[in-house]
Length: 338
Ligand code: ADE
Ligand code: ZN
Image (tube, rainbow, N blue to C red; front, side, top):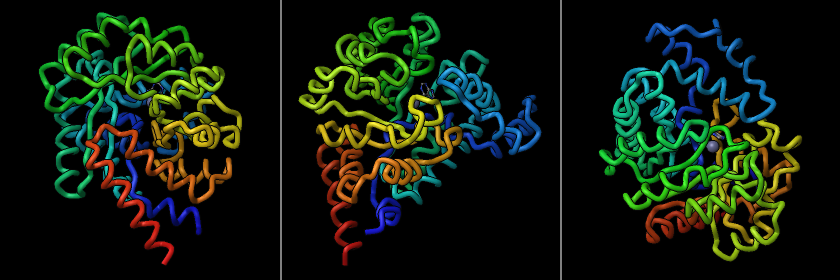
C-alpha cells in the first residue's frame, strides 16, 4: 500500500498543536498591516529566512514576536479557522489544541479576546466540518507561578470552553514541580492536566510531570528513553505521548529524522502519537509529520495505522467516540485495500 496515500486518507486526531504556532507568514504580514504592528520583516521570504533555530529558545523568541500581530477577536478566529480548514483536508476529525493566554495578556490582549476568537472558530468547525475539539490552556513555564495562578483564575470563569491545562515554553532549568501548586488547584477545579516534558529537559522532568503534576498525557517525552524504568512505567500505564517529529528535527533535539524515537516507542508498546506542534514554524502539518517520519524511520502500513488509532485512544474523547474513530480507520483501510 502506498504510505502517503494511506496517511492522507486515514481519519486521525491531532493532540499536540499550539494554535499560535499555526500562524503562517502571509497571515502574519496581513495581520501586522491590519493592526498597525511593526515587524522586522517585509516579505514572506524574509519571515521564512528567520526560521532557523538551534534550540527551543531560538524558536520561542520568534514565536512570541510572531504572535504580537494577534490583537482582535477576529484575528484569533481567522488563525484558528485557517488551521481547521487546512487539517480538515488531512483527515483530521478531532483536535485538542493549546493556547498561550499569558503571552497575550502580557501584551495587553485579554484572556477573553483570545478565547472568544478561538472557541468561535472551533464551534463553527464542529458545525460545518464535523471536527470536534477540546481546548487546553498552557501555563508559560518561563514566567513565575503567580502569573500561572492569574491565568487559572481567568480560566475558571470559562470552564465550559477550557478542558485542560498544560505547561509549555522554555523547559531547561524549569522542572514541572515548580508548578505543582497551580496544577493541584487546576485539577481541583476540574481541568485535565498535561505537560510538555522531556523535549529538551531530562527524563526526570517526565517523571515529575507524572508524579507531581499528575499529568494524564506527556507532550513530547523524547528524553524519557534515557530511563528504561520510566518507559516501562509508561508502557504499563499506557500514558499517552504526543510526539512531534518535525519539531524535534527543527529544534535540534535530533540531528536527523531517522533518529526519531517514534518507531521504538511503538515497538515497546507505548501509546505514541504523531502531531505537528507549531506547523507554520517547523515546515509541516500533521500529515507531513506522519509522511516524513514514516519514510525516515521506516514505518510500515501497520505502524502508520497504529499511530492513527493511537491518536483517538490517547485523546480525551469518550470511549464510544474513541471506538468510532478506530472503526472509521478500519473502514478506511479496508476501502483502500479493495
Ligand atoms: N510553545 C510552542 N511550542 C512549544 C514547544 N515545542 N515547546 C515548548 N513550548 C512551546
Ligand atoms: Zn508543543
